[in-house]
Image (cartoon, rainbow over all chains, first blue to last red; front, top):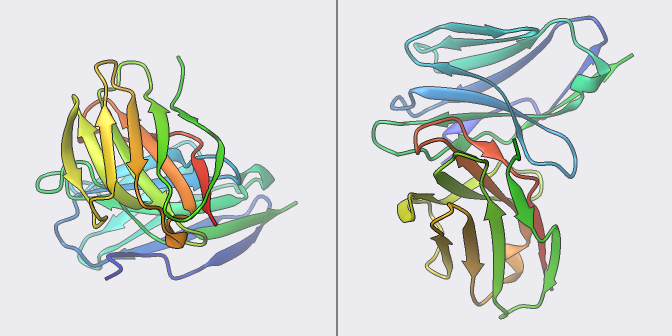
Length: 114
Length: 112
């Protein structure tokens, strides 16, 4: 039972353009969502998070949007840079009943071309 | 400020053996969570330790066990290794059990 899904295994974008990574979830109890970036041979690096009481959160070039009714979140990167090329994971947690357990999607490989 | 560290970096074991992986949490963090990441998949939650007590567990058999020490570092032990245990094992620490988790670089375990 895949509760968090990233349906695009890969995304290719030109430098300077917008990258949009998508994530869908099925568990309506999820109330906290995060995006992590992972380079080869490194652990996931925290990027940005959003609580279910918000629908948008920004941090520099990164913006996360949450649509609770559609059970969908997206990560926008503007402008995209070659150094952003990595695997991006979305993750969700249900803090009220499931402590700090994170449920991850399968990941999307982002390639930003110069 | 030192981040999360894990040892060893790589490990090769044979089926049936036992393995211990170690994790040092970030300074000031009292919670450690362990994840297993198979090739091409997202990390899967194994268990979490909060102030030396197991705070929650994922769908992993009892041969996966752990410990957290008074300095909040942690160990993951796996007994009776199986071929499917081959994976990247990630440790994450957080200020508290509900706070943002910061990951270490992982230990790559290969079971032959």
